[in-house]
Amino acid sequence: MVLAWEGEDHFVFFDASSGDTHLLSVFALLLAEVMEGDGLTQTEIRQRLLDQADPELLSGADVSQVLEMHMPRLAEVGFLLEQAV
Picture 1 (tube, rainbow, N blue to C red):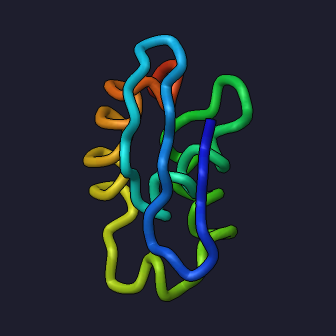
Picture 2: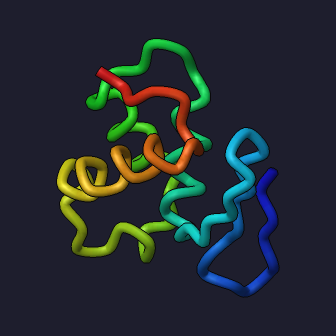
């Protein structure tokens, strides 16, 4: 379950399987949304982020580096079922 509040730059994710609650960034939510297709490569995910993200969110960011930082953490907390290849 994901809870978000308008104007906030974080959201709450509750993992029902573990009972844990996690505070994640807006970027993490966007990343999860663009990964909703099966079998996406990291290149495809990167392109979707560039296409869909608010330019201010990615301003000055190396998207590949940001992906490498966020994806393992999202998988670790149970938000992503598996990492893209």
